[in-house]
Length: 400
Image 1 (cartoon, helix red, strand yellow):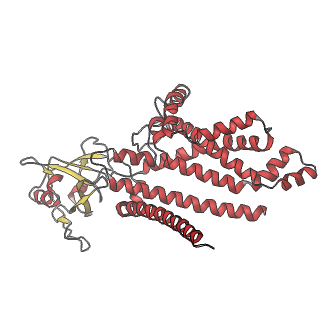
Image 2 (cartoon, helix red, strand yellow):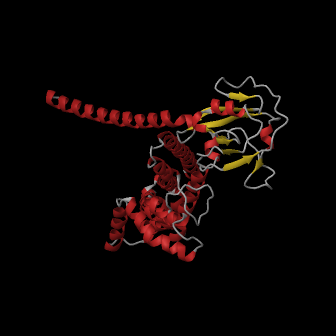
Image 3 (tube, helix red, strand yellow):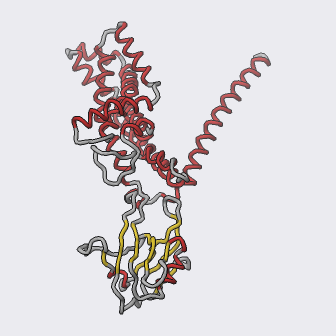
C-alpha cells in the first residue's frame, strides 16, 4: 500500500473516530447537565403531588393548654421548634426554586391540630400536617409573621402569643402528577388511532397494492410528511381537530382528543414506513410456501408475514411512543399550555414535554424542575427501549 493511500486511510479513520467522540461527548454532556440539575428533585412525591398548591385559612380560639412535647432528637438545628405550640419549621427551597417556610414536625398534642377551617366550618378533617408550607400568621395586636422573614422569625413571633387571627398554609405543590397522567392518556389515545391505520396502510402498500405510479406517489407523499415541521401539524390540529372535537364532544376548547388526533397524523408516516420496511425483510420464501400449501394471500399476510414482522412493528411502536413523549410544538396548539391537576380527555392539560416548555417560559426559568422532568422522560424512554427489546427477542425466538 502506498504512503499516500495510508495517509488517506489514516485521515478517514481520524475523521470517523473524531466524529464518534464528539457525538458521545455531546450526548454525555446533555445527560450530565440534566442529571446534575434535576436528580435532587426526583422522588415519589414529585410524581404523585399536584402542581398547584391548595391553600387553607386556619383559625383558632384562645389556647389554654399548650404542647408538652420536647423537640425530637432527629430534628436538625435548622428546624426551629416551638415547644409551646408543638411545631417545627425550617427554611427550604421549593420545586419552583423559591424560599418557603415548611412544616417539618407537628406534635400529637399541638394546639394547632385544633384549628378550624375558616372557609368551611363543617370541614372536620382540617388540620396542619408535615410538609405543609406556611405563608403567614396574622396576629391580633402586632404585625403578621410572613414567610419572607424566615422560619426562625415565625417561630419567635408564635411563641409570644396564646392565640392568633389566622394561619395561611398550603400543600407543597410543584408535582407533575397531572402532566404524567396527561402523557399516559395522550400515548394511549394516539397509539389507538395511529397504530391500526398505519399498520394496515403499510400492509396494503407492501402486500396488496400494485406497483404503479399511484402507489409510488403515495409513498413519496408519506416520506414528504416525515419532514414537515411539527408546528405545522399543530396549526392543523388547532384549525381542524379542535373545532371537530368541540362540535362532537363535550369539549369547549383544545383538549386531549384533539391533541391525540394531531399526534396520530404526525406519527402515521413513521409507523407506515417502519412497518413497511419490516414487511419487506420477511423472505418471499415464507409467502411462497404458505401459498403452495393452499393458503390465500390474506391468510398468508396475517398468519405468516405479519407475525414475522412483529419485531419491526414493535420498533415502530417504540419510535411512535418516543415521539409522543417528546413532542411539544404541535401540542402547544392542540391541547394548550395550562398545567392541570384534574385531568379530563375533554379538557386542556400539558404533557411532560409541554410542562418543560411552560417552566422555561417563566421568569426566571425553573431549570431544576425542567431538568427533573427531562430526566424522568429519559428514564421512561429507557424503560420502553428495554421492554421492546425483550419483546422483540421473545418474538424472534417464537417464530424462528
